[in-house]
Amino acid sequence: MLNRHVEQKQKLVKIGTYGWESNTRGVSYVFGQDVVHEMLPVLDIDLVARAHQVVQDGYEFFANKKLVTIFSAPHYCGQFDNAAAMMNVDEGLVCSFQIMRPTIKANKVVVRSS
Image (cartoon, rainbow, N blue to C red):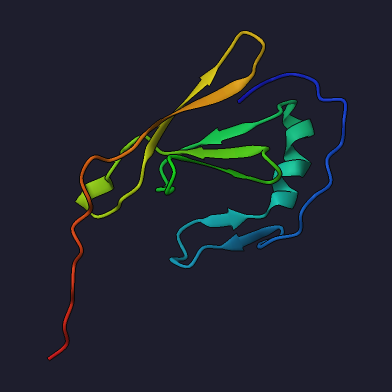
């Protein structure tokens, strides 16, 4: 998480979930971009960085680039053709990403019904 003051307000793009909802498995919650934008000033941060979710290109932004998911395992479990990423933060708190692409294709599993 980055901790610095932001002067400008950004317009929200209205996509997906708002507020809090139970996830499909019923063991945790998902939240909308409104929750991210509401909590950033409360926590005095500019960006939430999270992990532990496969994203195709190694990283993926949400909530007008106020939350980023970073996944660092390319070709996850031999079943995904996902890239991996590392986020670098410089002294000026500017974020950049290093992408690592898989060198082999994922195994396609075919399930046939009898």
